[in-house]
Length: 149
Image 1: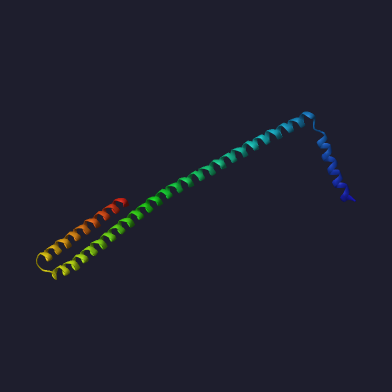
Image 2 (image 1 turned 60 degrees about the horizontal axis):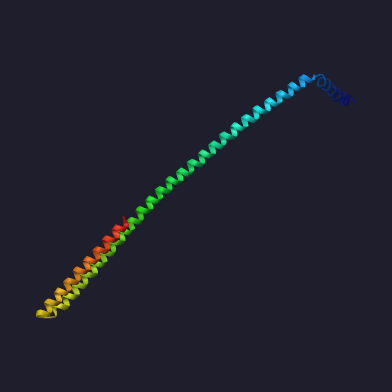
């Protein structure tokens, strides 16, 4: 029974204290609560704005880093492509020169089987073909190297 009386007395005491406030005090409490709420909201707004600014800065930094790394990657890719094109051009040139020289050797062997004017004419033709093949190979290589730059 005493267990029921003590809580009831405590509730009654609280009600009496609560009823003792005047209308002005209640209005003052409400005004203070509003003031505190406005302050809390202002702080929360400031915190939110700070968080938004930091997030935006992070996103901006990430975009700048990506753009920078993307640009660096493009430069590396361009350099690698240019190097590959240069190597291809040189390899094709070397093959063309070797082919022309070997063709010249075979032609001169054929010319050696001939005699007189026919031999001279054959050798002149072989030398002309070698010079033409060398010039053609050099022109193609130079054009490819120019495209690689």
